Length: 188
Image 1 (cartoon, rainbow, N blue to C red):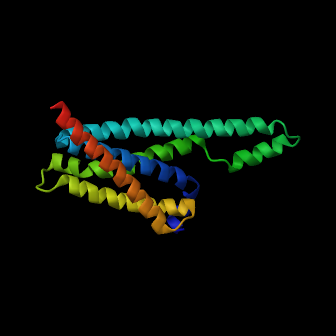
Image 2: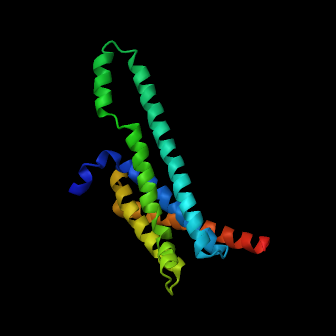
Image 3: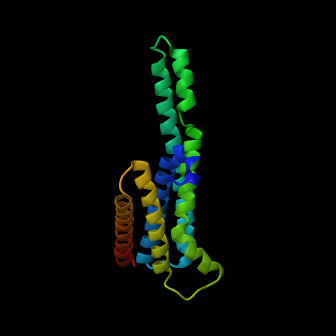
């Protein structure tokens, strides 16, 4: 793996996990909003609400899951005669639940910002462009990067990781877009 990632390698799985969910859910919010014909200000509000609330919820879930797993493993060590040595070895090798939650949150926010970035730019300095197309292309680039990292974490081929991530992300966006479009027509 690239030297820059070596230091962070133990937490790459959490980074991928948070990144995938952050980009997919935020792009789904953007897609659903565009499908419903909502304006950029609403997309920004919903996008940031999703980023912070869902990112926090995911990080808490990652923390609690890792902490529960760690506590159960430590509890099971009590049944061994050499429990003190095993406990020290286990605690030295185990990832920190707090760091796992933090990495999940930060990656969710960092990569989850991609789909709404162009809407923020347009809000600050209006541009004459198809914002949804730009958001889609930026998000697809993010999916590409995440898929590449995912292939490393899962030890699969690079193209499998990339194509799987692209496909699932675009599928979620399509569902959200058409739900927004259909509901907007029903409600208004």
